[in-house]
Amino acid sequence: MSATAFVTFKPRNLDRYPRLDTVLMVEKALYDNRSDLTLTEIWRALPKKVLWTTYTTILDYLEYSGKIHIEPDKTVTWLWDPEGIAEIKRKGLLICETGPKAEGSSVRGRASPGSLPKAQVRQVRGPADC
Image (cartoon, rainbow, N blue to C red; front, side):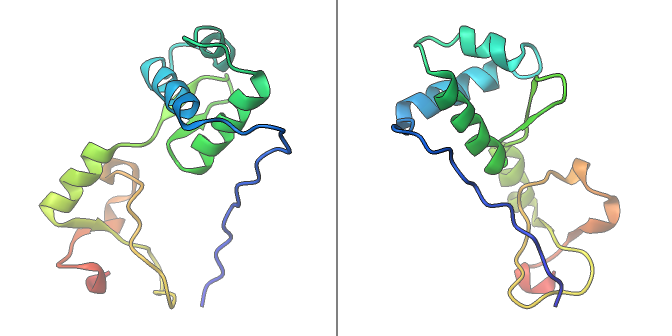
């Protein structure tokens, strides 16, 4: 079996955690301004005021969940693509792990076919073929 290290999400020790409507507001602002504005500029342009610590907690969560990637220049790259994943499923393409199959491993569905080497994307009938 191969050992896989998973990153765990450890939220800051806050008195209050962000509400769902706040997370969705920040998520929409990040999606609308991806790769255009820096994180600070997006924070200042939010429709409602949000504490910086709450904002960074939301950013940590979105990065952990695979929706965004924060670039070194502090801009956001949007990674989440549900339409692309639906198209992959519709076409019958699955993105499989490479190397020997570890017990309990599963099909990976986060990456798009264009982001992986061609050897990793192939036509399969189901998860058992991976």
